[in-house]
Length: 388
Image 1 (cartoon, rainbow, N blue to C red):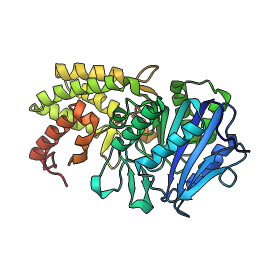
Image 2: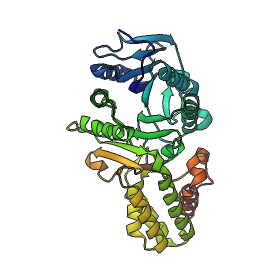
Image 3: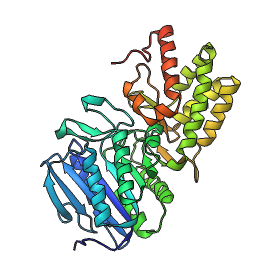
Image 4: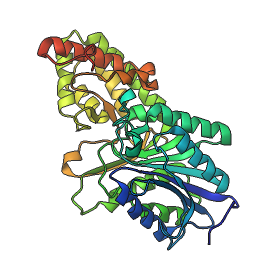
């Protein structure tokens, strides 16, 4: 039996399923996983699903043993999951109708990290909608939604999960730092099965008083455990956005040292070697930040770079109250991943990168431009001034 406006629960777990694409079948599978556990007096599990199959959008209050065919509470026409107003409407509806002490939001879909192709409206950050011209939510739009929700409801989202590929990026975390406490996402692409929702919800049912930081860690553990023995290479990380500013500060300081010393060939070669030996993602556009800095520190004997790299590495080690709360991986190919990726293209820099808060507040983008321009002069690699 569906409950209408409720007494306040401990958690409301909201899942925004952008299924109007080739992931449509997986959406029903994941709703089925949620229904294995379902809602309780202390947990509300609510879903908004936009499907490719019938071009309809549905909202659900998931009950134990219910699911897609039993738990629908609203049905309306096609929506664009890449429209910020659609996501914002779902969050506000869920918070008003199913109030709780804490709120988790999962954005379920394809993901592309910070990447934004601007007016072409394709292959952008998250929540792609094929029937809406491939529109999706970029980082600034997601930031706007979360800021509006916080201002309207007087409360930030406690945990933002991104059940999508490539979202565990420093740039993404920094864009959302003021409006979310904890984020959970993957450096690498995710398998078709995505998150194990039954395992995640089981944690909330059994431990309804769990805090946001602990929940973030438990989601990572559940995700990694769900792929044990399946032959999949996977990553998952939980970030504490209250500490993300320290990472950006240290990276800015390192970037300044690199910019100052780029005229030195040994420094450029150390950067090139560090990039080469770092795990990469998204066709080589992103790389593991810790591994890059670690190799750079080992290969470069410039005092300033060495010192700044060491400080940054300390800030990237996981632990309580740190930027990376917890991280995990499976697969030999990913053995040198450490939980957080960053943009480092081999050639041209996407001009939309300049639109990010991260670009404004950190000299990493300036370093990339100067380094790639120098590499272009030396080796014929495209640099900052040669965009599409």
